[in-house]
Amino acid sequence: MSSQGSSSRHDELDFELLGNREEKPYILQTNVFADDGGNREQKLKLWFDPRQDFHDYQILWNQHHIVFFVDNIPIRVFKNMSNIGVSYPTKPMQIHASLWDGDSWATDGGRTKINWSSAPFKAYFQGFDVKGCEVLQNSSDIQHCDSDKYQWNTPSFWQLDPVRQRQYEDVKTRYMIYDYCTDRKRNPTPPLECQH
Image (cartoon, rainbow, N blue to C red; front, side, top):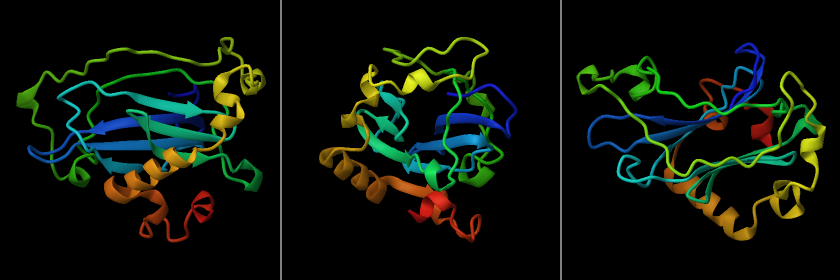
C-alpha cells in the first residue's frame, strides 16, 4: 500500500517476496514508510514455499499499530509512537502489486543475479479482499477512519491478544533473519521506535 507523493515524503506498507537461489528458502521482507524513505525493513525466512500454494497476507492498520500477518499469524508489529516523535503512517493509501527487478540488493545482498532464462515471471492472486475506510480522491482527511464503527478500531484490535503475542514472539525467534532495529552498522544509534 502506498500514498501519493514523492518517494521521500510518502507513507507505504510493504510485503515483498524476495526470490532466492534454488533450494534456499524464500524471504519475506516488510517495510514501513511514514512520511519518509522507509528503511524499516525486517526479513523472515518463510516456513513454507510460497510457490506451492496460496497463502493469506494481511495488514491491520489502525491508530494504535500496524500488524502484518501471514495466514493469520502476526509476523510484524509497528506501534504508533507518534506521541514520542516516531513517524507513523497517516496518509490515504492505495494498493499496488508489482514484479520488479531487485537483483542489485535483494538476493544475497545483490550477489545473486536474476536468471532471466527462467522468464516470464508470474504471480497469482486468489481471494483478494479489502476492508478499509474510503477517502475521497485528492483528500487527506482521514479522521473519520479512526471511528469505532470500523471493527479494526475497536479495543480488541488495539494490541495483540496473548495467543497472537506468543505467535509473534515465536516467528521473531524462529524465522526473523534481519531487523533494522538491530543493524548497528546501518543504525549505530537505534531508531527511536526500536528503543521502546
